[in-house]
Length: 330
Image 1 (cartoon, rainbow, N blue to C red):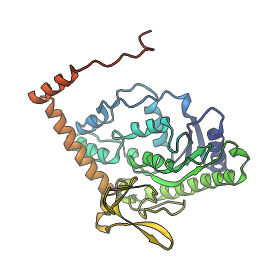
Image 2: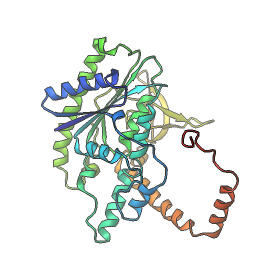
Image 3: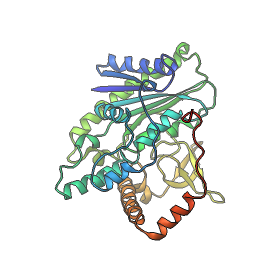
Image 4: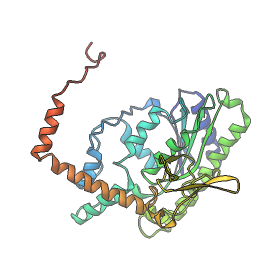
C-alpha cells in the first residue's frame, strides 16, 4: 500500500511538517510513503482550451495542451492507494495552487467523461482507457490557517475528490495554527488522520479486488467517511446555497437539493431519496453529467462551422485588444 502526501505550503513550513506527521504515522502502520512539496513542481493554470474534454469526447483519450508537471502528478495520484493534501488557508478557502490542481482534474479526469470515452473507444475497436483510472482510492484533506477564517476550505478541498469520484476519509481544518507543531491536540489529530487513511485505503483495496466491473461503479454508494457527521447526509458537506426567496438549499459539494431542518439540535439537509442518483459523486450522477458534456461539446464543435457563430465571434473580437503584459514586453 502506498500513501502519497502533498503539501502546498512554504518549504518546511507548517503544511510540510503536518503532512509529514501523518505520513510518519502511516509508515508506522506498514504503508509505503511519498511526499511532494508541490511548489517544487511546475503546475500551470488551466487555459480553458477544452482540449481535455474534447479529446475524451472524440475518443482520443486524455489530452492536455499544458506541458508541465501535472500529468506526472496525476500519475502519482493514480498510483497511490491513499492521498493526503495539506494546504494553507489564506482567505477562508483553499489556496490558489490547490484550486489550480482542482481545475486541472476536471473535466479531463472526470469519471463521467472517462466512462463515456471508454465506451466510445471500445465501440470503435480501440483498447479503451486503463482500468487503473477507474480504481477507487482514499483521500484526506487538511487546511492549516493562521486565524479563524477557515470554514470555506472543507468544500474547496473535497471538490478535488469529486471529479474522479474518490472517497473522502477525513476533511479537517486547523485555525490559529502559526505554532501548530507545538499544539499537541492538532499533532495527535494529524496522526489519527494518517491512521484513518491507511485503514480506509486497505479496506478500499480489498473492496476493489472484490468488484466485478469498474470498482468506482460498484463502490460509488459506499461511504468510508471517518470525520464528523456533516449537515448533508449524503456527502457530509456543510456548505449550502440558499436559493433567494425560497427555502430550497443545495449542497455546494454533491449538488443535492432539499430543505435544511433542525434534527436533534443540528441542521440536516432533507432531500427526496429519489433524487440521490443525481448527486455529483455517484456514478449515475457522473454519467448524466458526462452525457451532458458529450452533447454540449459536440454542439460546440458544430457551431464553429456556423456562419452566424463566426460573425458574432469576429464582431466581439474586434471590439478591443487585450492589454499586453508589462513583464512579458520588457
